[in-house]
Figure 1: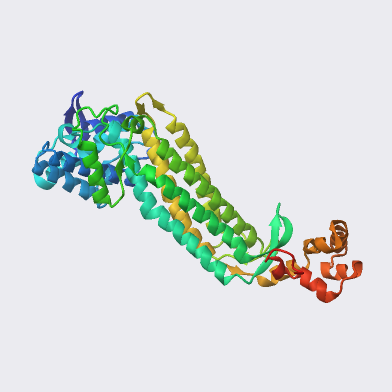
Figure 2: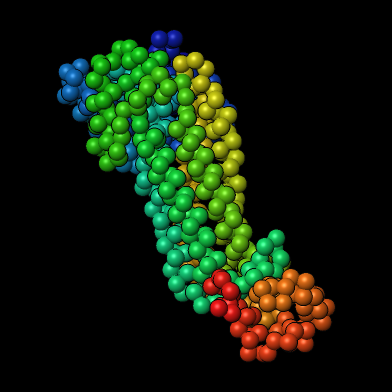
Length: 463
């Protein structure tokens, strides 16, 4: 019996109850009942992407004379209403559902059919109208590519460019600051802080170029392949028209995929994008950990820089301030690396004509794009933009660094240089003072050889 808060709906398998105010119908409710796995619904960006696909498909069907203008308009109004930021509570299906994402496709079909009817009074059928010329098997992979393309173009690439620009700005500001370089975490030859930061910037810029190359493939869409790649039940022009419509309504450079069979059974482009995000994650973790080391202390660590103080660092130790932004970025990087492993496993699950881990791939890929973009922005704004340099600490370490003797190798030889360095370590004296005792070089000449700033320019400082 229908309860006070539910209504009876039916599909090809029979009847069942759904919440009274739900926009979805029987097929969504069956999925809700079947997959109470994680409580994690599909991401909003993925739902938006499906709505973009349904909008574009209805327009293509209209252009082909397969759908009335009234029905196409109703579908498009409903899709736009969801994309504009509402109704996400009507998309509750768990990520861990059927591997094709059929449940999410039908969830969208049911919601848009009901919403379209409510907005226009036009009767829309979830399968016959919303799914016309389509299959879940081409809709879901297309939605993954659409959502990833939008996130990449509108969120991640701008955030990475901002991060690179912020680092470059600090390079200019800190070009005259010389510090002790480190290899194996041990004292090495001097570098300018601008040189150290330039490596971070170059990493981010290289990542941008890698992602832009991958972008060409993630913008190729498989819509029109329908069930197995043959395009059964779809006009031969449907895929091309839908892709063109998607390019127009999203302002993305979408193109039809060259081989629709590959687009259904493989997720190679999604995996490639995830792989590039994995590289970015490693770069971000390296930069974040450098910042943590440089900020360590302030008394018992390196104490080279001071990151902005953003919040109390301890519930028990008053006055403690921690490098919270770099720590957050490191966790983001670890999550992206884990997501990439899951996507790698998912991408190989293309049994014959269909990949059957699509919702999981979508979740992890879109999360990686989202959190990497936010991490880049926070790292730029709340760590790199505002750190200050403890120049006194840098100068003290430079003056005491026996590794400066490396600059004398071409004059006194490696063995004599090693002896000078060992004596400087043992006596805790500057290398200049020890070199004056152990060589016949005068102070003016030695200072020229051992000038930390000159050493950062490369070459032979005596020339």
